[in-house]
Structures are given as structure tokens and as C-alpha cells.
Length: 499
Image: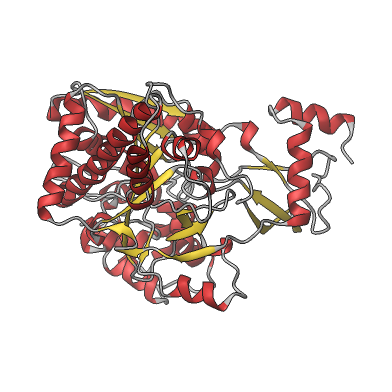
């Protein structure tokens, strides 16, 4: 099935023939649905700390940072913003010239409230000889939208989300990239330094670096710290081969194989190369202006405090396991693994080997928010490959929609995942874990796409916070909805939280 030319193409990407054959097999077999125990809820897998407990966790985090540990803020930022502007692209291409849909009307009625208004006005003056107000008065709405989207204007239709102006300040508007630099200073700085890592697409790397270089010094002076800002790209070796509907390799017009990015699960490789004791992970578009940051900062410190306290206890037990623990100690450890790490043995023999396996692995603490109908995965108690049950973040595609009991769990779930993680990635001897060892490779996704008018099947790797972290110790903490303010459409920037 694979030709000599294919094998050369595969090798150039750093992918093995075996990997390609495995992927093609996965198109045939699909991925198994996960077996569920229950949706996680407060008291059953989700911690909801009271004020006194929150204070103790914040203090634990401050103490941990004071000990000189290396902390990194990891921001997946490679996505283009094109989906944010789907409605406005549709307006530019529409067969009518004035705002007609509710979305279009809102955009133009409140256009002055966007942080990018002044920049857009400038490019309109330059390209059209008229400002936004004049163009609107003349009924030339499409020129305004086109100057926002197209390359001769602001090019917002193609730029990465992290480079768009989101929030207004007296000294000038800020991008999400800048808001993440500020967050890094406020809760992730240790030893007087904030380490921030952005994953970006190759096309935008130079632009991203240039913008960071322009802004970092200002924030460093403002917060009295130094920044160490690094970048990485999704590796070609994590791309996946595309298939035809009959599961044979999809080929381009010249006969070459088509590869597609493997989804955010590919970033486990980037995460694995970060030198850190603790890593925060948060999406690029989930940021707020400074006036709303105190709540975000407090809860980041809370979940980090939960993490370092759990890790400290794990390390203590692992050292005991190195020294022939007593029956009483084994019982105490088993209780901790089940109650604090939310991992139930389900018939497994709970001995020193079992405990070592469950204690000596990466730990993640995930903030979860109350379900308000936003799209996204949810927290569940799920059966693992070894028969144990532990906490996982699941997407709807991992759940058998024909299983009425599971669908009830999914639809009645009380919380969902806003991608708010803090991770401990070193073992009790100070050595970094090899994170790809903890991926559940049976948890990928297959979706239908098209290329040049031809249907194809696309394969996504196990998601970064789904299957890629499946074999980590996982703990969920309920965080307030105020800490979750994603921007999925341009009009989301008109919400009070972004003003």
C-alpha cells in the first residue's frame, strides 16, 4: 500500500512506517468508547474548598515558589482566529450590503467598544480615504468588515488569536499574549522570573516573537520581574496521515500522502520538552482585563496549592515504599490513593507495586466550572486500561451515544472543563517524567473533512487534556465561572468581562 516515494515522505517528517500502518488500522477499527462509572460532582471527584482551605492552599503555593522551584506557564497559541470571524466573513460574501442578522447588527451597533476600533479606523482611513463612522454613514459596511479581515487591512481573519487586540487600557489596547505575560507575573513568577512558553504555528512564529520582544520589557518593569519567554511549534512527526472513506491513504493530485496536524494532543511532545517542576496550562483566548484578574490569580494559586500538597504527600509515600513499609503504612497509602487521588482499584490487588505505579506518575489538578451549556469536555470517573477507575476529562465523541445510562450522565453532568490545568511533571527523585509514556493511545478521534472537494477522514491524536494525560493522577477543583471567559466569536469581546 505504501510506495518507496511514500516511505521517503514519511521519513522526512520523522514518522515511522509502523506509525502510519497503525494510523491506517485505526481508521478501519475506530476508537473504543470509554466505560464510565459516573459524572464527577462535588463530593464525588470534585473538591470545592471553603475560604479557610483556599487560604491554606494559596499559602502552600507561595511557600513552594519561595523554595525556588521552576514554574512555567504553557500557552497553546497556534490556532488562527479565522473561526472567530465566521459570521463577518459570511457578511462580506453575502448578497446584501447592510447588517441583517442579529450578530451583524450587534457588531456594527457597538463597534466603538472593540479594543481594535482605533487600529481599524486607521486602516479604513488609509485604504478607503474615510474613517469607520463615515463609511457606515455612507452605507459601506462591507468595507469596514473587509478592512478588519483582509490582509490589506488588520488581517484579523488570518492572524493567530493571541495577536488580536482584546482589551482597552488608557495606555493602549492589549492582546491575549500580553494578558498571559501579566498573568505569568502575577501567579507563576518564582525567583524573580516568569517563564512563559507559547506554542505557535510556523507561519506566525516570527510575528509572535517580534510582538513579544516589543512588549515584554514594559511588563517586566511594571511587575519588577524578568521574563524568560520561549516558543515551540507543533512537530511534523506528530502529524497524522489522512484516509479516503474506504480507509486507504488519501493522496494529493501529485500522488503524495496528505498529512494533517494531529490536534492539541500533539502538544504533549512540546510539553515534554519544557524544563520545569510545575507547569500551568491555559488556552490563549481565556483572559480578562486587569480589573477582573484578582479572582483568576487567586484560583490559580488555589489549584497550584492543591497540586503541591498532593505531590508532597505522594513523594513521602514513595520514599516509604523504598524502605519496606509496614501493613499500616500500606493501608494508609491505599486510602490516600483512593480518597485523595480518586483512583479506585476495582478488584486490583493493592500492594506495594500497585501503590508505586499509582503514586509515581505526573499529577494534574484541573479547575472545572459549573455547567452553563458551554461546549467542551466534562469531568468523569472512568475505567482505565488496567481496570482501575480514575478521574478523566472526556469529550462527547468518547461516549457511546447509544448507551442511555452514559448519555444521562453526560447530559446531567454538573461541571465542564475550561482548560485550566496545573501539572507536576517530575518524580520524587527530581527526574522529569517522560510524558508520552502516560498517553492512552486508544483515545483518539476520527472526523470527516474534505480537501479540494474530496471527502477524507482525519485522525486526531488523544487530546492534550483527554487521552494524552489519561494515565496521570488527576484531581478536579471547582473554580468560579468568572475565571472562564473564552472568546469564540468577535462579538464575545463585547461581553462585560472583556470591556
